[in-house]
Amino acid sequence: MREPAFWWREVGLLAGMLAPLGLIYGAIAARRMATKGVSAGLPVVCVGNFTLGGAGKTPTVIMLAKMLTDAGARPFCLTRGYGGSAVGPKSVDAHSEVAAQVGDEAIHIAQSAPIVVARNRVAGAAFARAQGAGLVIMDDGLQNPSLLKDFTLAVIDARRGVGNEHVFPAGPLRAPLAGQLDQTDALLVVGDGFNADPVITQCRTRGLPIFHSRLVPDPDCVASLKGRDVLAFAGIGDPEKFFATAIGAGIVVAQREAFDDHHCYTAEEAAGLIMRAEHSGLALLTTEKDHARMTGERLLEALAARAHTLRVTMVVEEADEMRRLVLTKLRR
Image (cartoon, rainbow, N blue to C red; front, side):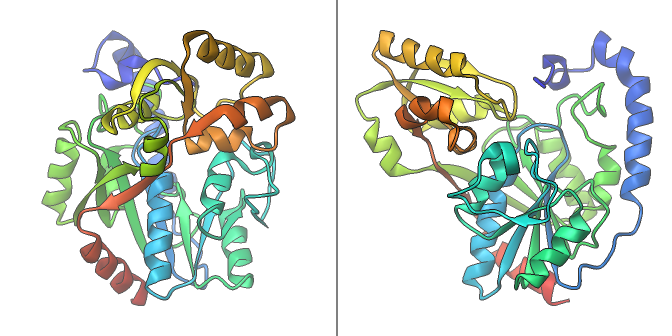
């Protein structure tokens, strides 16, 4: 689904018309979030966001997995495998799985850390524990109450914030913001901008720790595109964020193409992107998640081979403070 533009503007006619549905949806979501989860028998770290769409959860999960591994822990990531057919629980091999089975996020994360796909989070945590996990990092679990959580980190994009502050379908919020903040232990603000300031203010009022981060592109990828213009394409929650990251790294984005989140490319679309790039003398550039969806798909091999992948790393300004906070929460 491509999110409607009115979600990210001041409340207007469409949002007002859909507000009653948002109230019903929000009440159901809030009631569900308030239920008590099951103990996993090992520490659980949750990474989530307040809204539908991209905020930077996946790079945050990878960052936390590395941070905790470096601290001597043995984290396993846990995802429901959105976009894939696997019910799980199952471990993901980045080199043998395809996105149609386990989802693009799982393949992306599997390149950096052990990860389990499971529609049932309780079963997934039990499976991870049996595989030797010392703790679990839930990818996208803020609104999911099935597991007891020791630490919940909410991720917010500084440029987008929470939009019109209405609950779906009137706005991008997954549940009423106050109820989501009740489940949050710390906030991670990604990038630059002022649209997250109202949420930051509410977090400060509640005494929640606030961290700041940025996505740093892989210098080797940037260097390989020096002197070349690119056709950038992305099917993620916030394609504009990807385009802005590329431009901010000094890459010349001559053309861009945005697709729906988790978009499954067709052979015709792949051929069209290749032809456009060749006709205009452009290099192709995409995201790690988009490349994960092409890998192993025979009809997309040509596009996967030609497209440069802009790898990014989540860098937290207050990394030492975050590490101390997370480890303290997990020891408790």
